[in-house]
Length: 199
Image (cartoon, rainbow, N blue to C red; front, side, top):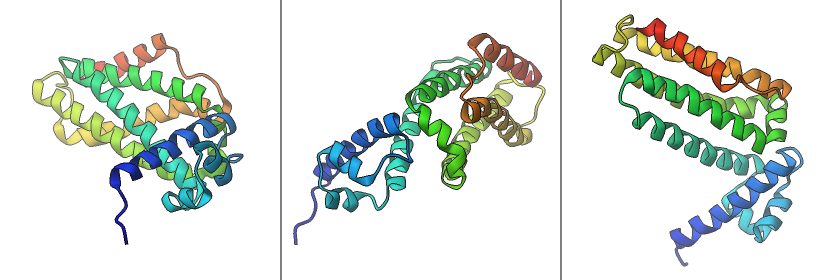
C-alpha cells in the first residue's frame, strides 16, 4: 500500500478550501453542499470526503485559515509598535478593519450565525482564547514597562477578558442586524479611553 504524498495531499486540501471559500462567500453555509464544493474544486466526491466528513468540517477549516490570516495581520501590526499603548491601539484598529472586511466578504455567513449558535460558538470560543492571550501579553508588557501603571500583573487576565467581551459586544450589531461597526474615529476614541484607564 502506497503512503500518501503529504505535499500533494496539502495541495489538494488547499484547492478544496479555496473552492469552498468562494462558495461560502456567495451562497453561505446553509446553501452550499458537499457536491457543490467537490464540483467547484474539480474533485470527485470521494476525494472530498477523504479530507472532510461534512460541509461544517470544510467551513471550520476555511474559518481557521481566515482566523490564522487575521491574527498574522494583527501580530504584524502589534510587532511594528514600540510601546504597549500603541500595541493596544493597533489591536483595536486592525481588528476593526478585519471584521469590516470579513463582513463584506461573507455577508450570508454573518447572517447565519444565529441559526448555528453551537457551531459558531465553538469557533468564537477558540478565537476569544487567542484574542485574550494576545491582549493579556500586551497588558503584562505594559505593566512591566511602566506604561500601564494603574493595573497589576495579576489584573491582566481579567482585563483582557473584559476587553474582548467589549469588542465582541461591538460586533453584535454587525452579526445580528448587518449594521456597520463603529467607524475609525469612534474606535480610536474607545481605545484611547481604555488605554487612559490603564495608565
